[in-house]
Image (cartoon, rainbow, N blue to C red):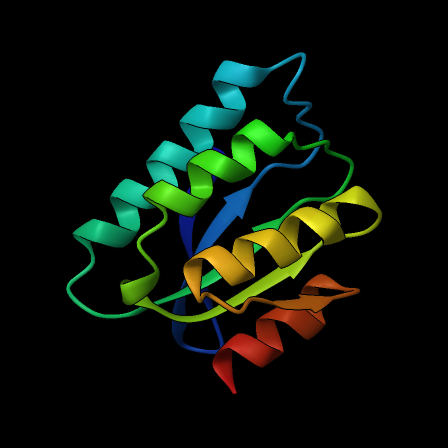
Length: 118
């Protein structure tokens, strides 16, 4: 499942996995992953720690526009990303400005998870 709850150092983290997805080739799977993550965040009774993996995937400006309007930023405690480079960095800057959600970008999964639980 591309979106699931994991436990790291006794903390609950929402893991959103876009690895290998290309919005042009697997648009429905990409959008379903985002929809599922939003539903899980909204269903949480408390603020959520989110770890999003964008390694080896491509995202479109259309996807980011949808995220700007549908991402429940008010329920996010911390948000860590990996696999953000090139055009994804530009799209992330646009997302930050539009939503006020300021995710941190990391090189490794361990760095991202440690940030979330710190």
